[in-house]
Length: 84
Image (cartoon, rainbow, N blue to C red; front, side, top):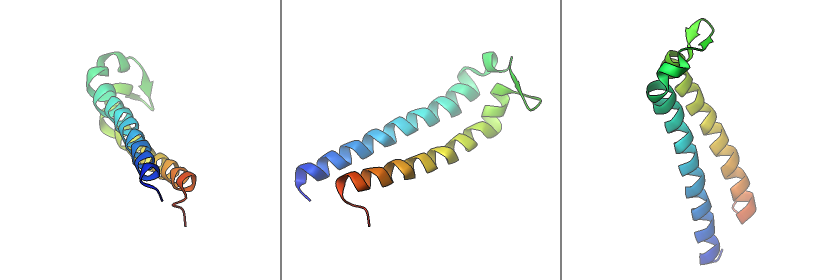
């Protein structure tokens, strides 16, 4: 592994983390607090959507983001030759 290759790997890893954290922030803080009033006009399973995101939706999205991160990192490992 060259130093420039490791630097590119790390840079791409950080980009993935920042994008996924941004998605999580938008879902948990944005949907649950900022856009709560407008989302509450929509009902999901009998609950207002803003309430649903604040109580459960952000946790579901967080778990999904973990699986997305694992998949992205597996692809990144293969791309740079770090896979086993």
